[in-house]
Structure formats: structure tokens, C-alpha cells
Amino acid sequence: MSKKVIGSDNMKAVIYARYSSDNQREESIEGQLRECLAFAERKGYTVIKTYVDRAITGKKAENRPEFQQMIADSAIGEFDVIIVWKLDRFSRKKYDSVIYKYKLKKNGVSVISATEPIDNSPEGRLMESIFEGFGEYYSDELAQKTGRGMTENAIKGTFNGGTITYGYTIDKDKHFHKDPATAPIVTEIFERYAEGEPIRNIVDMLNSKGIKTNNGRKFTYHFINWLLKNRRYLGEYTFRDITNNEAIPPLVTAEIFEKCQKRLSTNKHKSASFRKVEEKYLLTGKVFCGYCGNTVSGISGTGKDNKRYRYYQCMTSKTKKCHKKPIKKDLLENSVIRLIMQMFNNKSLIKRICDTCYSLQSTESTELTALKKQLKQNKKEINNIMKAIKAGLVTKSTKAELEHLEDEQERLEIEITKEQIVRPIISREFIEAWIMAFAKSNLKNQEQKQRLIDIFVNCVYVYDDKIVVMFNYKDGERAIMLDDVENAIKKRTPKMSVLLCLSLVTRTGIEPMIPP
Image (cartoon, rainbow, N blue to C red):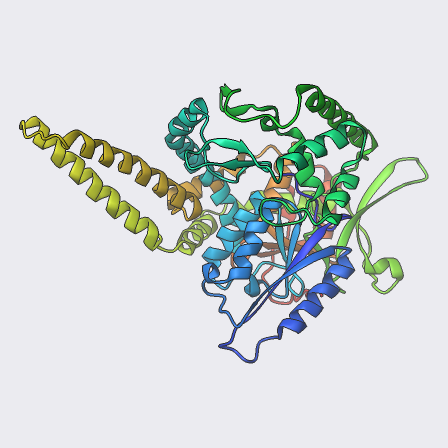
């Protein structure tokens, strides 16, 4: 799912608020909502919904119904940002916070605090990215384990699980049938779009009539766009390289479907042609003014020599309420990148980061432990039957019992893999190897530079004489004296790293104001 840049126009947001009954001194729900709404207004976000858990502790996320509903709703694609009063409203447990933020990230959704500029768990941001890479391993493993059965289902034309495609029902034998209530709606959507009606109009028409999706929600632009591209409505049931044209009753003709695809393609190209090609500011959303605490954003302008110049500027300084001068884009970004690269040379620091990240992981879940225990018992029973067969102790039920145990073994292995995706336990060696792989980043590649910043930098405070970088690890604060950097650049000493001229100081004497 594509993700909008935080701070861009048309961002859709939801607010999550929570009040714990065990602490009467906590901010009220109303107070949380008020500050979150004010924050959204300042940022230009459109708040479409609020989720509230009252008198519920934040220790166990699985026990918060509104929280769980919000996580499930993030997959629909209706919002881009979750706003919380403070990050501990989202979760008090670091591990759960990382896990749920990882799920949200996969759905293109970010979590931001209305009152805090930085994450309260520095190493948590690193762990999110580590989970992302490690999760791919388990996803591949799960795909291999489940692929065989799902391929068989596609050949037989039976339902493979998951969300039932809108317009169809599934019978007790897992076969597809037209839903008499919703199938005509699907047909009408295709016909209207094929005749030239905009998707927005179709959405408004459906919602005005009170028609709902499978999960009882209103129709959205994204849902209709997905529906119009779904080849199941032609009667095609596809899984991997298997396509079964007899499994699903078609809801539209091939002619209307292709007409819709041509129109979708044309509109996509039109949209792309109007899209502005903009210079990417790598530190967007992470830079704050050290004097007033306000957001620092990327700006550009053309000089008298007709050259394009790019800077980061404090937004308050535009109204003369802050004296912070703009800072050159390349100077700021390259200085931060060089500090990141210097980090990889500090072996003791890398060891500390890896140890902390590893310790964030709790022991494996009780569910995973139980599944492993069941699998161990299952294998023991299979082994006993095999010994009995070898000894000639075979009854009529032996074969059936063995087949049942083998099916159960496959089910347990799949469930274990699913659980490991949700709550993986990653080795310290993997964490260190993953982190150190970034030491080989190509600094001429903008995407790799962006990745370095996204993963290792929490936020940056800019002053007129220095830059203060907050990294995603405990006590990860570094300051760069700008005069030293600019002097090193002017000397143009190719073999001498600018890093040698960076003055690194501790937190003493540096107290950047916290943005509102």
C-alpha cells in the first residue's frame, strides 16, 4: 500500500484515546481528544473517526476492543495516521508497541503523538525495521507450507479462506455462489463506471442508499477501485499459476470488464501526468527548530543566477516570530548521514544497541509454547505408529489414524509459523548482521540514504550554529558544529572525512525545546 508523506495534504487521520481506571490522575478522554483534534488542525489532517477505550489498562493491547478494531480497520486503507495524546496511550509495553506499529506500517499507517516529538522507545524504531526484514523469512516459509493446500483448493474451486469477495457467498462445501443481495450491486458498479460515471459519484450513490460492504462499513474510493480491478468478477479463480474458470460464477461480461480496465488505465496515466516532480527532502517530518520547537520544512527558491536553491526553514520564522535562519538542504542532510555512518565504526555502541534490541523481546507467547508442545506430542504419536507398523501391529484404523496425525502436524506447523510472524524471536546475531549491513550503503543512492535516516534517526533539532541529532538508541544524542563542517568543506581535503571535524558533545548544555 502506498503511504503519504506525513505532513502532506489530504492526510486522513483517526484519533485513539485511552483512560486507565487504575490512575485517576491521568488526562481525561475529553482532554486527550481536544489536544489531538487541535494537533490535527494545525497539521491540516482530516480526522474521520475516533477510537476510545475507557477505564482499560494499556498493558495488554489484546484486551482493548477499540484498539483491536482500529488495527483491523487500518487494513481497509481509509486513514493514513493514528494520532494519540501521548505514545503511552498506544501501548505501555515496548514490545507490543513495536509489533502493532509494524502491522500498521504494512498497512501504510503511521502513529504520531500530539504532544511528543519523538518516540518514547528509541530502539523500538530499529526493531520495527528488523521485524520487517525478519518477517519476510517467516512469510516465505508460511507460503511454502500453505501453498500446497491452497493450490489444491484452486484446482477444486473451493474457498481458500480470508475475506469473502464482495458479491459472493460460500456454502458449507466451500464453493462460491452469487449473493442475491450484493451481486447485482457489483454488476451495477461495473456498468456505471464503464459508461463513464466517476468512482466518487458511485461511492456517493451507494452510501446515500445506505448500502454497506461485507464488514458493514461505508463504501470508499479505494474499495471501488479495488473491486473494478478484481478478475474474480469475470469468473476467474487464480492462485499462483493456477487459474480455474469454472469455480466462480461471473458477475460481469468480459466486454464491460475490459472497458473498465481501459478507463482505469487512462485515468491513472492522466493522474501521473499532473503529478509534480519535486525534490525529496530526506529529513521531512523529523526536523524541529531548536529555538521555538516548531516544524522545520523543506523550501526552495530561484536565485539571481537562475539556480535553484533548497533549504530547510522553521515555519514560525516565516511570520517573524522566530529568528532561526534557513539551513542548506545538502549541508543538513549530508551531516546527518555522515553521523549515521560514523556510528557503525563504534563497536561498543553497536553491541549495546544490539543487546538492547534483543532484550526488548519477551519470551515466546504462551500460545506458541502450547503449539510447540502439541507438535512435539504429535510427532511422538506418529513415531509410535510407525514403530507399530514396522513391528507388524497394523489394524483397520491405523492408516486413518496416521493420516489424521499427519494432517494435524501440517496444521500445527502452519499455526506455529503464523505465530512466529506475529511475535518473532530474533537472534542477537541476526540483529547485528542486519544493522551492520547498512554500513555498506551507497551514499549516492537517495533511497538508501532515506532508509538510513528512517531507521536510525529519531529527530533533528537545528540551531544557527549547530545541529542536534537524536538517534534511535538510548543516549543517542550528537551535536554537529556547523562552522567546523563548512570549514572542512571549504578546505576540500578529499581523504579527510568531514566526520573528523564534527564536534560531538553530550547532552550537557544542550536542551532543545520540545515541539508542541
